[in-house]
Image (cartoon, rainbow, N blue to C red):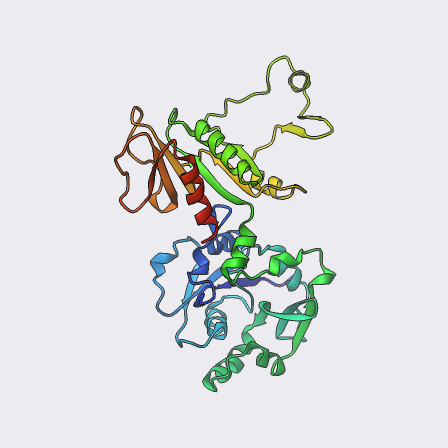
Length: 356
């Protein structure tokens, strides 16, 4: 298998989304950072930026940055600059609006590299995926000429170079890995269930707030899941239960079930992302997931403040949906603050965030 570089095209205008797609959050991380992390196992990771984008906007280490030189020419410009910069002969390209991208995609496609072709393009249900493809450096002069002629359609390239079409259907890769998120509606569907945190200092009333919001959302006919984050790792199975006895006897995992529910406990490292993944996989997944804690995370959050504990916010301002407190002082002038008893208003504010 040939060594390949990977390049993520992040210089698009995001005109249909109305905001920079690379910075949209999915499961607590931005689209761009998710893809970089997923593809970091490859020999070289390149991120292609727009000509006027600040490098400070992207701070991942170990990544090579390139920049468009010609504006308004679409992804073909980023492809050219990435090919010119890459240290390997072949480069896998994907777009920064593909948050479900998996490393298995370039690994699968690279198996077809040989001396017979310059381009290796995935197809899905018969449709070309030119932004999910491997291109050779041998294409550089052809791409140069095409840009000089103001011909920006990638489909024209395949008429000029030897192209291998590879159906994703012959692999075990889910088609969702090729999904582009272009519109707010697509983003809402991707983000379901909606995930937010109820955060704050110890004894600030987080559990009470979750119980009240849970009741309110259920009244509004939303299904809700709750994840509790215990930063002290002090939770155990209840003493005296059969599952606790099984665990004490050496079982590496225990489970109990009835006709309507089950509970599984396993000695396995888990974080919020793994738990969210398991909840998403449920046949009857919830509309909303509330996470207790994680004040330093990138998830949207309601911060609970209590005057006898602290009036100072401990969450990142940009992640706050609102604050809920038992005092009238506003922690931030541009973040809404509600009474911690105004549950309907707080629920309304959360739902407005979902539908933005």
